[in-house]
Image (cartoon, rainbow, N blue to C red):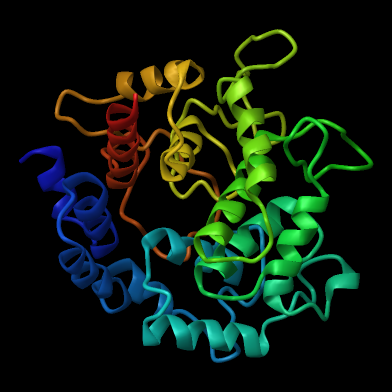
Length: 313
């Protein structure tokens, strides 16, 4: 069994992305496979866990990865068709019932879910999911644009504790801006997004700008950015950053060579990539992947990244 055969033997959320991004099959074949995300496997399991009050995990957001925000983020990455009846019904329940009461700063208690709260890392994830599922997140996008720091990135500790950007927060916001553009948002975001990309690229996706030295680990979580995890949630890592760049279709240059070499070096002799790390917390559904074992998510994303590099270099 080849690595691609192994991927195609997985969940519909993996299969449709392999068909589209690796195999390049006709769009109607991709769409038929993608439609199964709502009724089979991980996608169907996640949808079934939504409560009548629109919430997952009993909250708009929590520390455990099973909240409304985290599930919507994951459903977007699974590729649940946002126009499907199942997605429409689930998002309508969120819009009708879910606020930030008890889950964020008190001043945000009455905010509707897709209005977000105060931290740009959280708001980036909310805006990405909202834009993906067809919600008007323009006010949230405008807020994020106003919070861009002079170095081009974003930081949840700004403006009082830090004037330097965070790789983690910056990537969360960049993914939101890209999804907003794809969804036909009316606010101009591309200049800000390009400045944010430059912030990452100038640092080779993992080096200090001041000294050029590799950053061993995230100062808050201790996570090594050279370890590939899925879901990443708010955490950055080299594969996640490259996958974002691949989806922008930007032309790769020398600033990604080191990161690409790292991805290539992690490929096993059977053509697969393992799950290097898992962020501690309660998952909303078991994706069946264990640290140290072959990972369909890492293999899919690595093949997508390498394909982007080969096509555009």
